[in-house]
Length: 180
Ligand SMILES: Cc1cc2nc3c(=O)[nH]c(=O)nc-3n(C[C@H](O)[C@H](O)[C@H](O)COP(=O)(O)O)c2cc1C
Image (cartoon, rainbow, N blue to C red):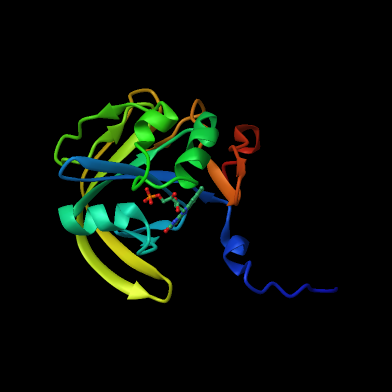
């Protein structure tokens, strides 16, 4: 068997990854930042971890407000995910740009995104630099899903937006579902 060397593209060996939309707000400014490098970190206390570059406008907003939202889009929002990931909230209002709708959170001031399927409202718990990203740890204060889409796990009517690399997205193949 032959092997190919994978150099700078190595992160894409651990994709596809769920693409989520991070929302953050400070004073009158907000933004929507797609994130693929995200993981649960602790069940109790409920913590999640994500990698965020310091240059992102969302980094500036969440480090000032100490809170952020994680919104889970379905595959049909892939074009809007890409649009939000190729523009900065420093220059444009991403809600107007994408046509996505602000929805108030229950415990955070940052807006959530009405068109998404599930939501995690988080308080910034830790922020540490690792190489070219910050490891952002969020305490999950509230987790909600739209009725009919989740019961212990996502249901068949939900197709996540899976990120392969750059502008390539996949949906879940529910026909392949296997109970082992
Ligand atoms: C699907 C997708 C996943 C991304 N994942 C990350 C990520 O995990 N961390 C990160 O810092 N940037 C990530 N980006 C890049 C940011 O979303 C992008 O730079 C965005 O325009 C920043 O917006 P902002 O300046 O308004 O925060 C991703 C982009 C896309 C399209």
